[in-house]
Length: 365
Image (cartoon, rainbow, N blue to C red; front, side, top):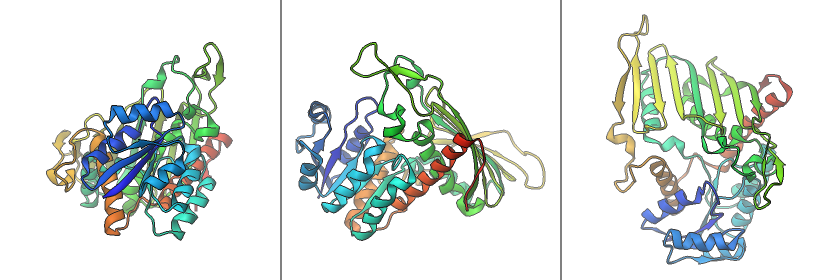
């Protein structure tokens, strides 16, 4: 039985809730400790999720002493310090994305991950969404042929309301980039995971971004406004080493989750609102399109091997993230979602931010 601690229960989005829900489905894990910088939130979390075996801790060190493993669900600027402290205390670590405000910040955590036999995993779990699992199978089978270009968009609608108060994710010191990092970390991980074998690594990035709601009311300070210091919207184009073009849009002011891959053999289209299907339109590799777009249900094999995995959007991929974390701990397996992977994705985000800051294309070698 793996004893698990949750650090950071959240106030608005509450990503910790998805971790907790997944752990509760796993018979080989038990949540024994919860810590939040605001103790009242941790106590509410115990009640909300009926965590009968858990205690509220007064600091992170108490969590480490009560657990074998921790999920870090705190603001981005705290990830590395907490991850290093957990590894030093002998805990396995699952850290939410993005890894840190900048790639250079990740160095110490990557170093300690190499010095220990503990699992150090980054939470890039969208690749376990069944529709994307199916997309990977079709790409690897050659269904789309040579990939010509890719379009991907992610984001949310909640922060489009200018009455939403100034949160840590809107402050560069705590978050690093805004929409670019929050959504872009998943977006670039997905594309690199799906397409690196056929398209190669990203070699060029050109990005533009904007703050469209430049100030918001400070939390707990009615009428006092504070500056938004990172991007509300980012748009960036990439070229891979094999010449494939990627086009990304990340927006916290209103966006859908979609991914379209176009190649010599046709199109694959994924909609995040319908994660258990793909739209496929086939094309003759030496001619034109041979059929109308067809909605194709995801085959059973793409739902993963575990029958208790919830067939609910988001819950299913977080379940498999937690399942992978626990299996890697107990069975001494390896994972692709290492801290080094987290740092690599952050390097891509850094490059996009440099491009936005300078107005120039950034070249990666």
